Image 1 (tube, helix red, strand yellow):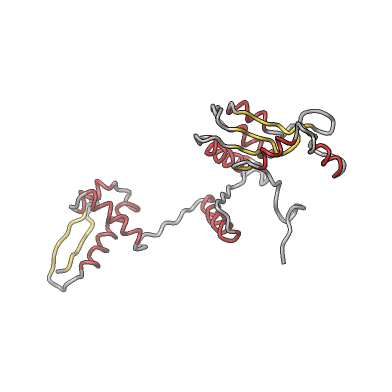
Image 2: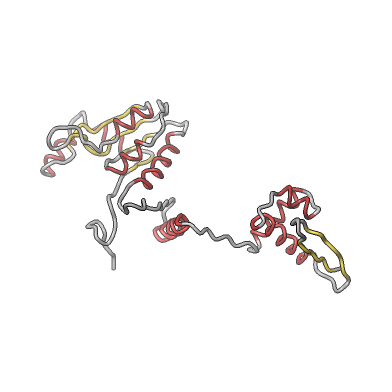
Length: 247
């Protein structure tokens, strides 16, 4: 028994039988899966509409659409810049054995604007803040990280602690502009532990002296126990000094 199908003007499917040969059940099911896949991905039909058109239950229609995907009868191509970002994310994750990678497109008007990275960074920070269990978040500094923190929605997170990884005093004695811990603490209502140190020191000896202060050591220890750390690494590219190629 050969199962034939034709698509009529209203997009429904009619089945007719012929005696021109036998077709195996597996091949027939793949045919049905192809029809269901076409109706779902090309014609834009719902599963209920597919079920009605093919004369099967909604559950059967759902299984047929899934079968079309699992048998690679359906190939999806995303024609959008975000598709390249997703491909780069997967390549970086595999190449460097990373747990998570997100590549975002740059703003059209500037390939150095932090907007896209800040949005993705804010989303990741928010995911950590929504945890119910107490969490220590260590925060770096910089323009992009500040932009990310500025996009956080108001939240009440008294169970969390945030700790600064950098000093918050500029060389002229003023507060460091890109230090994010105070801004973040106001947004999420969490306990915060600033680093009461200059952003830069003159010598390694001066750094060791500062780190030995009783007021500073607990902050350093808390930063070392952080559950997650957010830092900026600056700009990377062929024209930037941070970029190098290993042989």
